[in-house]
Image (cartoon, rainbow, N blue to C red; front, side, top):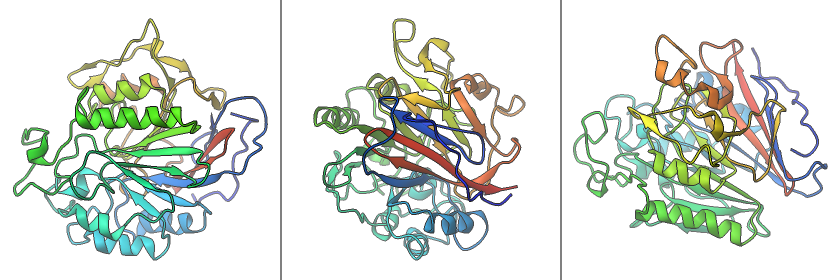
Length: 372
């Protein structure tokens, strides 16, 4: 199936969505048409090769999308022979403004043929391009690509983008041997891994970045990272519930993630007397219907009412299954947290990215997927 050239029409003043292949989502504060000039950005993770196949097709469509920039949420080349400098050069030849965060295949956490070991080559090859000032996290040396935020546009910003790296091993390049959860490496500074445990320095920096956006009157707060917590795909709560619970408690508008090679849009989540936090069993999140404040069935959500998670590991790497009882029963139990799911086992699946159109009144979200 080729990428559709038309866009699903969003409802007046809202975050909206239609159905697989073209999905629009709009957050709106009030039921009125948007009145301000905004911007748009693309985002996705899990890209693979850009010289052929789905990754090349996604990049070609991004190049004509009109997006102001692209936010990569990790896992780029998937080949030890295509390092970050090469991959970034290929990407920027068609679309220059790409800002990144790390995935486990980029840092050396994956040490086989599907990973690259020098994340610094991505950091330098896909260097920061925007006019907005970048604010660093608690990172020694280069913070870009690891933990940072920027407000966009640079004048009268509408949104804050906070990029974090929870539980991605070797993000600082300190591991000389294999460092990952499979071999039971500890997640700490000696393995270049930041756990974002409650009240540690990275957790507190992230919380402060959210809070300062609110106090300065920035309308939208979005947090990007590679690994996930809730998912109807294959992954468990890799990032830990401490960070995820904090983001939901602060009603971050959007959490953008990759890692699972799927498209998943959650219902709107928030805490209350019947849902005081997400908990896990063997690292998989338990379902609590009281954590859902809007099921998304109207095609939009109300701004400020809660958090929406978007897993967008769809740029080019092979798709995984969703809501798959045979392969991932624990994730099936998490599926009720989501209103839209796309994977290799759903009709009309495809690869691509999401385009977010941001204004004072709303965020419209549209998928640009092409596939079978």
